[in-house]
Length: 344
Image (cartoon, rainbow, N blue to C red; front, side, top):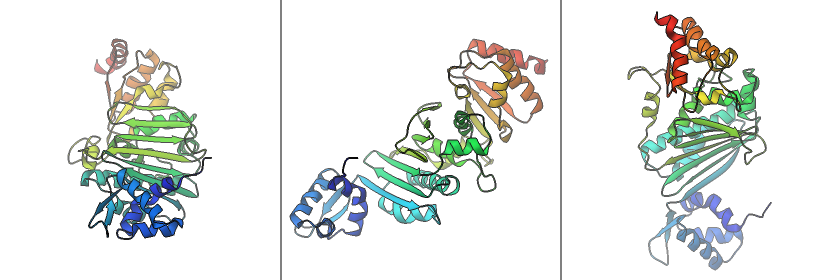
């Protein structure tokens, strides 16, 4: 592993350093690294040039403050950790963003750190935030068993890849007594980009894409779960706006509607043709009142699959409304054929 340069080491703490040492930053770095004040000042000049710090006041007695670039990184033991205290004390004071973005950042940060505390079965969590003039990044990485392996085992799912599909629906939790299962789902919809890497798999949601996606991918850590979140600082999105997308009416605060990307129901190159595939798909649909089935990228489905989904399931669950969209002509024919007996 390459040795970390002194400047790289500075970047990990510069935002906190400049807040805590606005008038004696040069002396602080000289003492910390046991270097001359001249050498320390060269580092400060580079930090200023690259936008990490800003200078004001007289040249002989400058006052430093955080620049448009910010960076805070901390490693915590999970035992006894409280996510809201970590956010309020160690991260929020050092970041600068509009109130709506701050609310989203607070939500995502605390939800993902809490998941590491309650679900990871790990010992520690690394939290990293960074911002520049355009965007904020948050990374939360634990050393636990990995979210996909944990959910697969706890819910007795046949394949870890089904866990990613279930995450895309929402209301997925291994501990319903403590969690609603809404944290990952809503957080993924609040940020411009949201990604989970664990157990050799990767789940991703992009705000400009109508689809969630998953793929096999190796993360930067050999174990545990790593969550990446990014949001533009000029985003106008609000937490209330995101919640409203998945409720039935303004006065309804229940998470009652979800969008299911049907292409995630396929494993590998398989086609959606069987009743067993439909049964795998409809797991936990009964937790919602409205399920929007997005058939984008699905060219065709089998008669048995359509019958199990649109006739059998709908007949036995009349309180769950299934709304297909983005259907090809073939998919639409299978849907109409399945619902015909109910329409007669």
